[in-house]
Length: 211
Ligand code: FES
Ligand code: FES
Image (tube, rainbow, N blue to C red; front, side, top):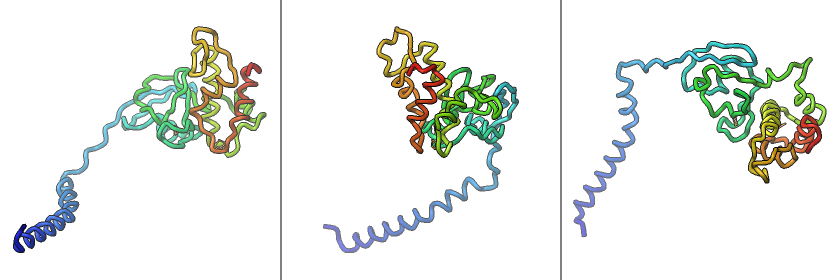
C-alpha cells in the first residue's frame, strides 16, 4: 500500500508529464524550423508521348501520371475520382495497355506512348467507342465516361489478343467478347450513375454484336 506522500508525488509526476507532453509540439516544431530553409524539391526531366505529341516535362518525381496529364499538360479529360486506384475514372492507355494513371508515377513512363480520351477521337471524328456510348446512352453525369471509354477500347483489344480473364472458361482457347467477358474486364471502372447495361450495349456494338 503506497503512503500518502508517494501517491501525491505520483499524481504530480503525472500532471507534470501531461504538461510536458502538451508543450512538446512547439518544441518539435521549433527544432526543424531553427534557421534552415526546407530542402528544395528535386525534379526530373521526363519525356512522354501523349496523343501523338512528344512532351518534355520537368516534374517532381512524386507526380502521378494523372497529375502530369491534368495539371502539367492540361488534358483534363482524364478524371480524378478516388485517386486510390479504386474507381477507374483515371484510366488511360499506355503502350497499348490500360492503366489507372493515379497509381503510377509519370517518371516511370519515360518515352511511353500515352493515349487519353482526347487522343481517341475528336468531336468531328469520334472513335467508334465514343460514338457507340452516345448512341446507347452509356453515361449520365459523364464523370466516369472518359475512363470507361479508354478501358472499353483496351478491353476489346485484350480480347482480340487472346488475353484471358477471371471468367474465361478455357484460357488456351481464343477469346470472344461475350457479355460476361466484357463485364468482368470492365469491373474496375465504377459508374455511380449506374449506366452499366448501356455501356455493355455500346461495347457489344463495337465488338460486332458477339455479346
Ligand atoms: Fe484513379 Fe480512381 S482516380 S482509380
Ligand atoms: Fe455518372 Fe458514370 S455516368 S458516374
